Image (cartoon, rainbow, N blue to C red; front, side):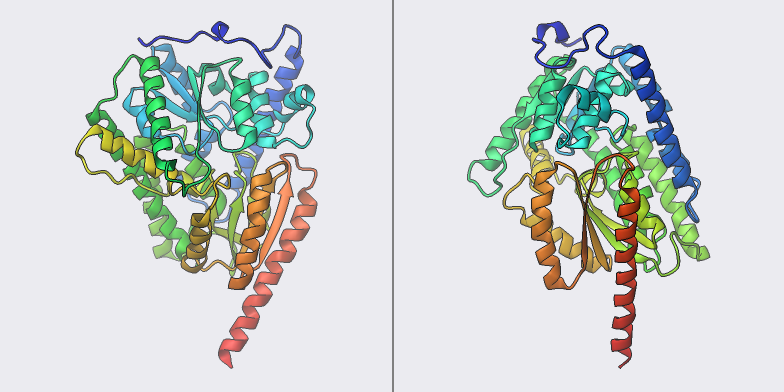
Length: 449
């Protein structure tokens, strides 16, 4: 067994719950409200038109207190190590190759925001950060209570400080993410960070990283990438066969599920979607507006924005989110020569294709958006930022200017996790969708002439 870092070795700087700080009633209420929120969202998802029954597997994975949590707890009780992550830039292949299980711990629960608000007193802080922290503060996320280590790339300021605060409960490995991709030392710096992560994981597990196990995990995740790309093909169609919300559910499930089993289930779903296509059965309403969703991450069950879009006559055919398509967008290309080159290939896969707004320049994001607009026949973009997500707010302005040149309309939204603004959002989205459909009619008339 590897050396375990005890929590009491870390000086408590922030938030370890003092006795009586949070009442048992508050903890119970947070758990109850979070369960209700997840159940309500799943009920809405299951009410979608022509939704494949195979989606129930992914619903269960993300449900509050689902069976997967029991599996992970059992794994840890039998001596396994559980590694939490806060970002898609953490190589899951390395975690798996060392015998540990990786799980993303970002929270989408509104009720978990309250404990953080009480302590931090910052109404303008990112709700994703507050919800994730609050979930740990009142033990509302069982996965957080079984972590042996948390790996946190220092991307935005909020997540960097979140990781620092989480050190009061669990050992944290913070990865220094080079922000400027064009520098001469950028690639070297990131590679050294990945090597540092490997050393920390080896210390945790008591294992050495071996080439055959690393290649095994790369093959697993590459197979998952292929299954995901096949799924994306069903969103390319003139009449998409799966909703954007369901695609988001599937992608997020990959970050907590056994990846082999996840791949099998996605391939089963793809077969079902093929049968639907052959039968002329499609997702969404007839002539739905083809929308791209971009901006801040949307973690289940915070599906307010995509739900409003797809209930207002639109269908999300593509997303540019680190909580969905970007999770599985790029396979690892390796030349099976030696372990160091494989590690380099992994480091490059998790860095250079990443379009996080923390990077500058971030031309890859613009290129990806342009390609997706063309390939997926996107008619309009909804760019959503969580309140306090300054990086995406700034990036959204740049993207809007690019889209103007392409004559693609963009709706910029800013919201919190709560439902207080949902009707205001709905009004704006409905008007946006109607405008897209009106533009479509004008284009058709021009073509006829």
